[in-house]
Length: 152
Image (cartoon, rainbow, N blue to C red; front, side, top):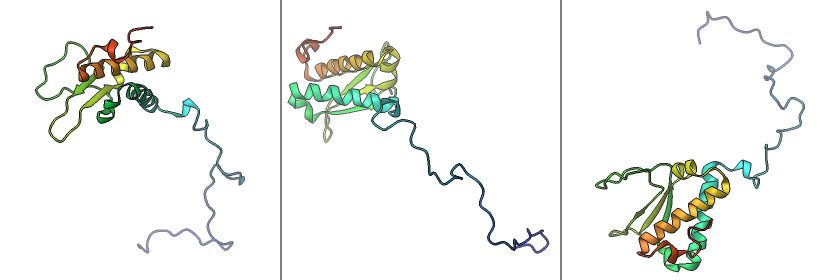
């Protein structure tokens, strides 16, 4: 340490005082803004994942072979190598099984959120997109996957 630098005077009363902070009255930290079970505490991404999970569970009850399919959520579509550019922005994509890899269905969160304004619309759109992707994967019509497909 440089001896020419000024040193603070030693306090005869004891150790130096700590700086003040919010807990100055000993009450402890205040509680969270909202309890964890309240939807306000979930991020948009977590809520979207819940929509996907609920829809996948509904579809797996009807189509048990979907348990072998991986479901994923990405923020935005990324063009696959060797795949032609789509005309519009896709809401989901089927990636067929390859050697050593299972089939995968991917939903794109941001394009779905932009198209659906309310939570109910978003949940319905997620389910419709999943139905369409499952239909493409299984080679069936969306109506065969879920008879209520397209109903409002």
